[in-house]
Length: 438
Image (cartoon, one colour):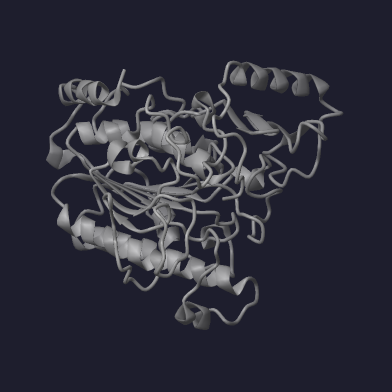
């Protein structure tokens, strides 16, 4: 089925849904994705060097996920999973898309995005910032369910204006290059644009996907932010970039408040993968690119004041795949017209209507690095070519310091079989394993 008939089907199916409420009753939705930040680089996780009061406020006004995961350990796969609600491995999106223009490298057109679904119900759908899901015109955000776009297609770029931008890292408004680039700092510019969209479309309702490139390299920081955090040590540029990121989140939250939209706006904050090399993932083991906790467990919080409890901590494992069905149901859509989702609607679990675990088993695979978590047991391997799987009880050992594999061989075999069954039949990634840390 081609995309045009699919969207026609979406519109007919969703707009006739008995679960669809009046537009005025449906929540606005803001999904904020940060990039490469470390687990210990937000103060809601106890960091002293990285104060993030605005990010923390999302948890304070809603729910913090203490076992919050993403489905990928690098940038593009996580985004593919988040926007489709499906393990990206199912459709061959296991690795980062290389920064080469290609008609084949991109989020497959056979996949339905949450923007497709929400747009078909009458939402204004706005994408801001980093895309990293394909560079050919058919992969452009405006072809994947978004009505508006302001950002750049590549997986990284400088935070300051570019004089000689390429077609991959240039700043785009919809499909048109912005030239000359005249903003001060990319993180602040994306927040400014987001606040402008919120004011302009306050009555629509809207879905805003804000993909900051902060705090991904290159590590560009404003002199004014560096001056503010000179004391205390640590990586000064990362601290300054995090200060800007938190300020930008505050601009978006303030814009919602100014338009009296806070109460009925569902806001999600999630980081795209574990902190990259040089970032602080304490107390977790590992980093971006592998499937130890430091590569996949991330800062993750959600607020929806009119629906969710305030200041709650949810301890059962959740994953970024859950964002799609949660938003879909919040918008009044009972089921996805696309392929079966791997995520679940979190609202019943967060409001206490369902006391079970949202997921008994979760999986990760990035080339030769893989993991499976079943309950509180996790089996993981850093590299299948050189290492044996290690078993951990995450309820007592989130730092993955004590390998229980020798003591519990039966659990090793059982979890290996769960993983083998899950990955059976997955397609190869067309672009192979390239640019793994972009």
